[in-house]
Length: 120
Image: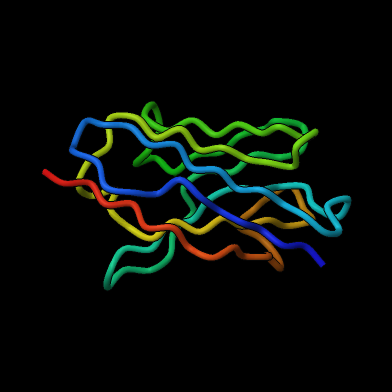
């Protein structure tokens, strides 16, 4: 089994920055792609960014150029640096992991969500 613990959410003004962290534990050898989804009130959950064990990254168009995902395999931790935050980035952010290279495909393990609120 894999457990994911996310942290780093909070309240920030538009234009500000936050960094999310997601630490994996348990059967970490089974993990390849890790990343973040988000879900705003009344909207579907959407993939924000993902990174494979080999550091191949993928981003939603809405965050390209503003968010950066990185990974420390030695610490089994993934980070999401969020810059130039906008009110529309407000959502609950969920860490996710899968055994494949594409986070959006197949079975995923989820962490508890962390709230990110961007005020205008």
